Length: 425
Ligand SMILES: Cc1ncc(C[n+]2csc(CCOP(=O)(O)OP(=O)(O)O)c2C)c(N)n1
Ligand SMILES: [Mg+2]
Image (tube, rainbow, N blue to C red):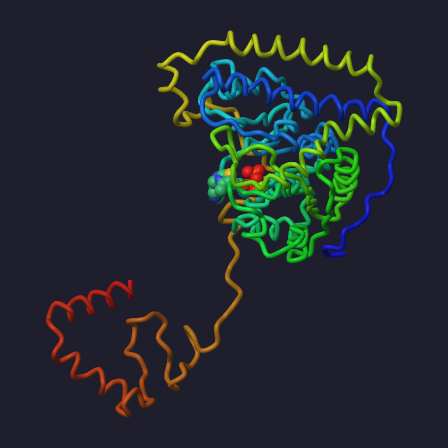
């Protein structure tokens, strides 16, 4: 139904699910708050990005996936990493470039994945490129009969990259089991969304690919979860990819270095009053799912966990300098164990068996009659061009070419002869 925004089906969650969403949003925020402190102590290597105010999106969408599903998070999706099962220590160590980090200190920020266990494709900085990659993961899963769904996230700014469009078109044409979360936080660095997209709703972009889309309040974790759950189920059932636009706001600057003074005060105040965690606490309390003792228990659990995880990360060594020399080039078996898994006999899918004789013919080209009524040249240079029609100034093209050929310097003639010899070969 094109970009028509389907209403989510009402679906109730269990108490545990409601509390899980709360816990992961709190964990997401606490992990990032800890990293701000580490950054201020100069212990973070590289930039530090924040998802303050956007936690409901990372958490609510990833929580809608099954264990076997695949994600590729972007910089503001630490919440998704946590829901998937990445321990906070890995996130801390990765940002600190420690030896025990997932990339052993070779890369920073959230540039790490886990293909074997958690099914996380490492993000790359180039905006939009994870879209075709994850469409490919979804198609790969289909070939293998796994019934998986692939999910990634993109910003309002990233939705204007070329690869966003190529990737979505590809995913839609292939009916890939792929869900794209478009986090419209109103800013792409210092550019407000209205200055770079002439659309009220970025979900409308989906119409161009024949895809369905949803719009959801990105600061309402239950709405985000329910919408994502429905999209994931539909994608898994073979309905093709789905786009969800989550409307939200980037509460801090692009990264720690950016004070974001370009954001109007009233806009900030509006969204600060809609903090997703505060809103959810109010909801949970009203529904009698959260009370003071349960909240205290969660507070303490988070504090203990983060203290231990931060401690572990801080105690991890930096990689030894000589380590930088190794693992730069793939050296075969000692580098990785990944082997292509052929679903059909290899001889069947490689030449000569896979080679197919061209079955098309172009009339008048190669063997038939040329437009001039004589046999056409098979390749340029095989025969003189047939020029029996008046050219430019009424003279035949042949005649027009004559004086030029006469006066052309020898070198040019030789080069022309060389070119035609080359073409014959
Ligand atoms: C192809 C590409 N262009 C530019 C950049 C530099 N860059 C990184 S983040 C960013 C802004 C992204 O804005 P948006 O997509 O709205 O995401 P947000 O930061 O708001 O989460 C830019 C321009 C990049 N990483 N990749
Ligand atoms: Mg943005």
